Length: 273
Image (tube, rainbow, N blue to C red; front, side, top):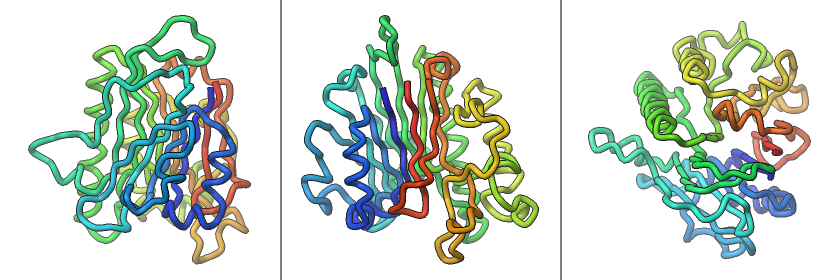
């Protein structure tokens, strides 16, 4: 089984650059996208519903060309048919957290993971976490989103679900996860309060699977600033993640960063079971 996640920085632009063709050619069981910047009706049928896949989209309710996430599930996947799909957290007291189209949660009641012969309850999530830039209001929004997200996954983990969540978390966890930690210690994306949230995620039992498999690997980044040609110099950030529950972590054969794939200011990441 194979799962790919990619912040495509605009799905329509990614299609023109050939990135989506690369995705389809991988024949992954799941591939999920962040920052799609499109409503489903703005996409060609071949992109909205590729042959052999069922797709799910969450998009911004505030404006077009902004935010958005998607999940493509292979119809022949051993994960089976989803029992339910959540489009956002559904918090009545904080509807603004769902307004920007940043979250999809897909529930499987009898998913087969890897070569496991016994099915498991699985919650698979992709999310495009907010950027904390553009002033204190956006940082506050990001932190509220973080808190709501952690409460959501903890609730379902307590209900017996194994969890895989992936996406652009928009924060580098430790100094090894970005090229210039000292220069960015006061910048959003590497603020202590943002990094502490990832500490909390890990303390709740979720595994940053790439770092677990590559504890000392340096220069492993998933995002580069296009304006400064940072990718050519590998001055990057690792802000795209797969987090999994411990049982899932034990089934992962390999966690990859595909930094040789272009089409966005981020590169794809993947899990192989």
